[in-house]
Amino acid sequence: MPEFRVISSGRIRLSVDESFAEDVQRLGWSEPGGLDAEFRSGPDTATGRVPLAVASVPGRSERIALRRLVHGGLLGPLLGRAYLGTGRATREIAVTAELRAAGAPVPQAILAAGERIFAAWWALTVGTVFEEDTRDGLVWLETCPDAETLLPVARAAGRAVRAFHDAGGRHADLHVKNLLVRESTPPEVILIDLDRARITPGLTPGERMSQIMRLFRSLLKREVLPIVGTRGVATFFGAYCGQDRALRRALLRKVDRELRKVAVHALRYRSGHG
Image (cartoon, rainbow, N blue to C red; front, side):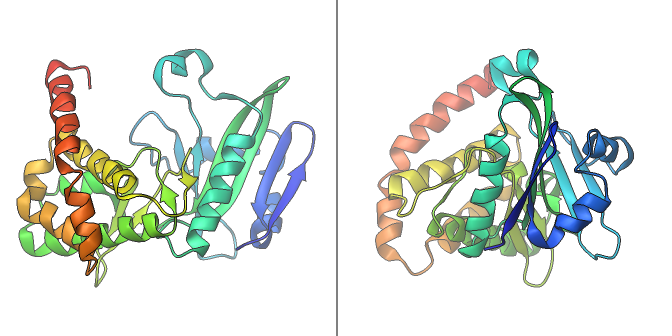
């Protein structure tokens, strides 16, 4: 587990991996507006509502992926980036670091930053080591890979999600865009965006299957399930279960209930409310 240094200077509050602390200070991120400057000048990798930037660190081969925390749902337009306190960002970084130390395929946690907006309200940013040569799962699937390319990635995804769950990880929003694909030999899959993720040792088969089916529903919603196909789904599931026949049987007992949820969600997608 890395050690994190707390840096506080009135308007700024940082929790940063000790080995990166001096770099962060040299980059000016411990000063008001320092991180904002990175978002204005750095490469923008955002593909949705969440602002992302990738920052180079002089003297290091690693780059840092910076992600601003933004409220979604009904409160999104009202609160935007404003959070009460800095706990949400520091919890995400702590969970990410603990899961990585336990062997989960997640990025290396670097920093949680808060800049005071007003009184107890803070704008929050999370930083992890940028995973080079990767694409999110949706972008990768939209290249329409053939079976020879797709099945090893499906196998890697199954093993990655299994390792994440075995480490106690419980993702708050496990969907296809939160899987990064690296087409190495063999392929690698990395789970990202651990905002509100929790560590729950000993996940039950029901909890595991609920997470797996959330990922399945995202394929349906994004209209890429036909690209994955039945062979891709079966390959993922087989890799997730491995040689654990008891787990396979326990998960399969949950399928009917989860498929009913899928049917309800599919109706919402078709009606435009998903």
